[in-house]
Image 1 (cartoon, rainbow, N blue to C red):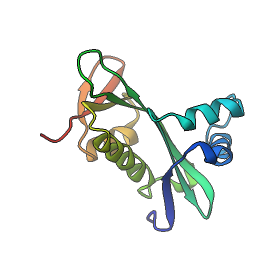
Image 2 (image 1 turned 30 degrees about the vertical axis):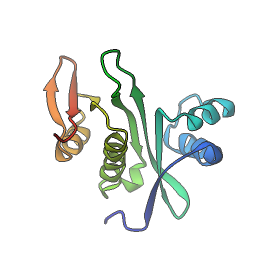
Image 3 (image 1 turned 180 degrees about the vertical axis):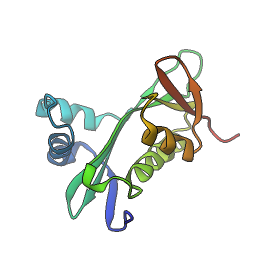
Length: 150
C-alpha cells in the first residue's frame, strides 16, 4: 500500500487544533503541550511542523528546527522528531515527511541538515540513508547529515 491520498502540509498558527490532534494521537502517553505553546511554536519561522493526514485524520508528523550559527548566516537544520501511526507505516509517509524537511532546508538555504537516531532503529536508519543522509557512528546513536548541493 502506498501513501496516495495522504496529504502532507506545513502547519501554521491557524492550524493549532490539527497540531494538538496530531500530538494527542501520535504521542500516546506523552504530556500534551499547553495550547498557547503550540500557537507560539506554529508562528515561528525557524521551526517546521509537517503533518500527514489521511481523510483529515492526522497519521504522522515531523518537527524540525533551524539552529543559527555564529560563524555564518546559514542555519543548521535539525530534524528533531518524526512519528507515523503504526497503521500507516511502510507506506512511504515517513519518506514524504523527511523529503518535506529536506525541501524546507533547501528553501531556507541551510548550511546543512542533520538528525540522530538510535543504533537499533533500523527503519529510521534505512529511511535516512535512502534519502541521501550520510551516516556516522557517534557512540550510542547514529548521526545523519545532508549537505546542500554545491
